[in-house]
Image (tube, rainbow, N blue to C red; front, side):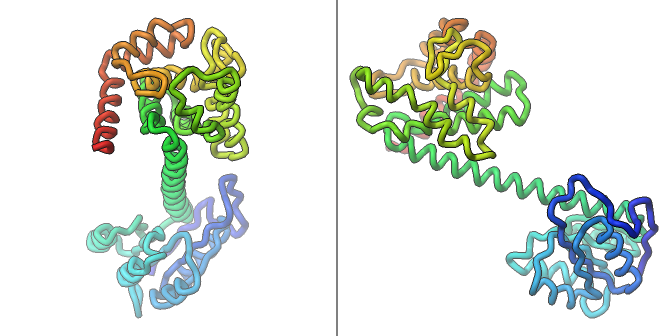
Length: 356
């Protein structure tokens, strides 16, 4: 038993919600008929789809047909109480992760402890206002959405890395190249205090910067001597090819300019457009530095690796000519702190382990 005090949010008319996506489906379990009706009315007025259940047994029957986005359940109920229902739901494989909020009229320490110890997502003590109810539901659904987005992003990034690694596998000399480049780039970007969205754009750009090389014959990629004029012309197109490959994917669209411009140079001597200075996206200006550092410190068909100090010296020498001076300064701070060499040694150890 319990009650709901109607606040400003609890009205009989539908509440507009600018952030409302397709209506979330809620399973509401409450043995008090008046309370169940009140909960349903408030939640439906807020735009949610509600499946009401008078006890845990009926709730399980509903779960046999439907998969709600959230379960809101009283604790003290006949036939099957909220604790038993929670335990039963967590045993259903594809329902185990549904967010679960307990309603308790008593608010006793025993009820609260039981809810927390079982792993409930939240609990609400009755009596409550309609605003408190809606705030708790919205907060839990938002956290669930954020977790889902994070999981999808992680899976997406893993797929992109797998694609990049598959492309790298065509060239034995570039193993771990995109991983190292991304690690260097992230270290320097953090030194520059870039915001989270720019860090993600940089990450996608780093992972996919050489994806256009999929169009280049292996004979060119593995050639030990100088490239012919035609071969060099083909190689210079890979940034454009890579950009075209992903420009139709909305989630990756912010990284397109980075991929297209990662071989541009501060003085305009780069390719494919010959862009210069701030006409080059800042993510591409940073990527140009760490990509060059990684190329110099790695064995390639056309040269042997140089030491980190030698590559670092070349980067600083080219500051203001090939590379953005501000980016070089940030790279220099990371290098002097040991971050760059630490990343290099980590991947050298991984490479040695793979080769042994």
